[in-house]
Amino acid sequence: MEKDDCHSASTHNEYPHPFIHNVKLTRAQRIRGIILGSVLFPLRITLGTLLFLIMWPLARLRLAGLSEEECSRPVTGWRCWLLHPIIWFLSRAVFFFLGFMWVKVKGRRANLKEAPVLVVAPHSGFLDMVVLFPTQLATVVSRSENTNIPVIGALLEFNQSVMVSRKDPESRKKAVGQLAERLTSNGYWPQMLMFPEGTTTNGSALIKFKPGAFLSGVPVQPVLLHYPNKLDTVRWTYKGTTWIEALWHTASQLYTNVTVEFLPVYNPSQEEKNDPNLYADNVQKLMAEALGVPATDYVMEGRVPVSKLGGLSLPLESPVRKTLSLLHRNGLGASEVEAALDRMIDRCQSGAQGFKASAEELAAILGLTDRQTAVTICGLYSKDETVDLRQIYLSVAALSGFVSFKSLLHTAFTLFDGDGRGSLRAEELSDLMGALLGVPQHNTAELYTEASSQGRLTEDDLLRALTSHPTYQRVVNEHLQPEEGSGCPMANGKAVNNNGNMHDSNGSLHYNKKME
Image (cartoon, rainbow, N blue to C red; front, side, top):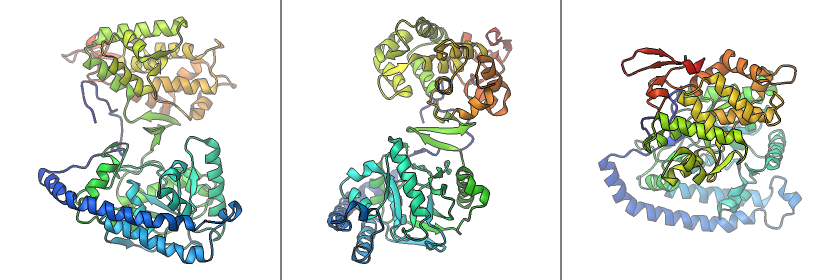
């Protein structure tokens, strides 16, 4: 991860960062990989491609000529007993040629009646599909976008997979209905296989399980994936090794070891059946203990890695610290940052130009001569080259220590209380907390319930909840206050601690009147 005078990643994370993986090679391993890879990689990819081309029409044949109604039921007859073993054999051959010559199996796979669903973790990358062979090509859940990929789309159709679009809420509702129907079909549908983490990690921790596999309250069988190799090449994560690099490094090894471990079936209690999130959390803890790694509340939201606390999403890689680091590298000291924040809040409060700013406007407000830095900062907060200035002002001001938290919250409340009612609606609270924390907030209902009084959320109510409730007090202290000794540009060039006091370079303590 990037390090500078202002550390880009939050130092409050209790567990290892699970979303970054880089293959670490010694010089000898790099040379060996180049020599072997120059021979093995093209040979293996060519053989795998040929097998995929053979599978393509065979996979399409399974549902060919069937009506939509027939396709909505499990395939039976010759389409099953003839085509299923052929596709299984060819798929296994693909992985064999990629170097997965042996798939070691530990434990016993439960039958369909014992466990309608298999939950697999950790999810490391696309090569995890090797788990399908000891599970006899169990039905999976996949993104609907994958159906457009040649061969892969045909194989998903062959598998009668449950397809879901992450961008379409209606698609998610339909997928949940399909899952419930299949998992409670009492053996009518084949066994399902799901990766409850929902995204790939480096395996250093289990991230929070999504509740999909646990919604129906049926027994599940936990399945662990191990890759006991000297080089950890199979993982493809949010940052670090790319998918093509993972494929290159894996195919460049003589062979890759993998172990699929079936744990005993987990039968949920009545309490867990009534609460899918509790069920998911308990299975996550059990699997984490078996793996010897921590069970965390980390999740990936909109391609942003966050941890969850009191319903709030807390960024693992703070965009605010990255912003301060970029400003510092561009020669902006504490006084320049403070002046830029003053210009920013003046524009926000004037209302004449609106809250949105382009990269060029942001560069002018911040006093940057390099437009690319402004574009980079915009990219930390939005998906294009525009940004909501309220978000930058509030999040940067919180960590810079130029104003007290009480004053900052007053400013935030005023900016998001659009109608001047003196109270916030639920969606306005989500926008306000998203601006303070630097990432969108999708679940502030818990905070709204805790802070509101008689159906209204006033500024005093919110301040009380954030500064007195243990959970939200932790959020404020760890994510909305300057870090002592962090090295970030602070008021008067001094670091402000969470109590509002400042330490100069000699360690002397000074009271910060701005915290009053």
